Image (cartoon, rainbow, N blue to C red):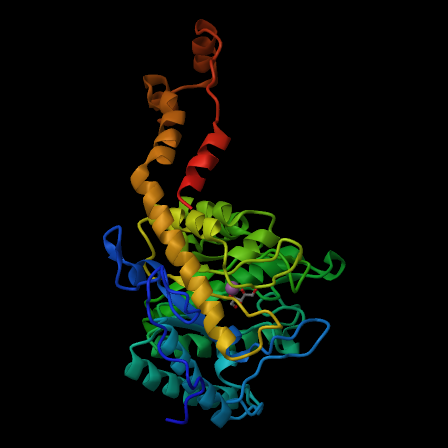
Length: 437
Ligand code: XUL
Ligand code: CO
């Protein structure tokens, strides 16, 4: 293996809460048991290849700033393989077990489909060897169906049937690659599956095409025996002005409408929830309520910027709210916490990759412990239970069982004194939550 890409940075140790070493964990001790499971197994951290290895840290007003001494900037296989080595050095030093990639992040596109497949095949072989050596695993793979100009009008929802065919080929190869690498899942984020203006768009036809595309992916998955999970990742806008997978509820509706609900779970991303005008908690509850919360893209937006800034998650209270829902559904099965996050443009040194991931991991370690403490305390859960206690009566049970009609309920309501309500106690509950931070 080549010289180290991060010389002088050792494997990040756990030093406990007293440490002031910025390249150490104070709260994330992977082996520490919380609620009967190690922190490592609860949190299932994953590193995103696209941000960690390929994001130059540009913004709409300025070019990239990231220092990448290992990358010669060429679109060659050699450069791609070198990036893989650097990535695995990073995974080992930071102590992250899983990773995620798009086909085009790991392997450059060739002059035609076959050439692209061949290049991808070489990189997959290399990834496979590195996985084997290091014990690292692929949380999910995906196909980049939004970067190339051919996808300007979308991929599965393109007005061009030829683009649909091209996207089908690309997903087929990306699924093969994910399967070969033992991936635990595959994500469909509809990067441009939406519209910029309805004046040029046949919305219903595009939605039908997207459903057809996903049905074919499910059929193909079964034909190759890929057992990983399929996830849809909601996002309301950006780059298009409206995307069909706009939020968790619209994804669930889409999946039900096209008889795809059994085949898909949701991968919920915090910054996408914000763009949709929802809290992350809301999106997670909608997904979990339908039994479809599969995985999380852990990042955060900026309160003053209305776009997908993909910052590292540093809000401990928000991490606690997220982990309350994850623990509430009994944890992750195939999914995990993928840092779909990039450093700020000003944090351009390689060591900043460590600071960023350590910060995110510490945030979720604390979020997990806080959520566990809130659950063991039980006051909030008990409040919610008792708030609905009237529904545990005979009347509530009969309504929930569908045994009563509107006229029967009218009779019951007339015979009773007017309803008496209790306070919702929001501020009291917020204060209880804050006690644990
Ligand atoms: C884009 C985004 C993607 C998906 C994978 O906003 O979140 O990186 O996670 O395509
Ligand atoms: Co994402």
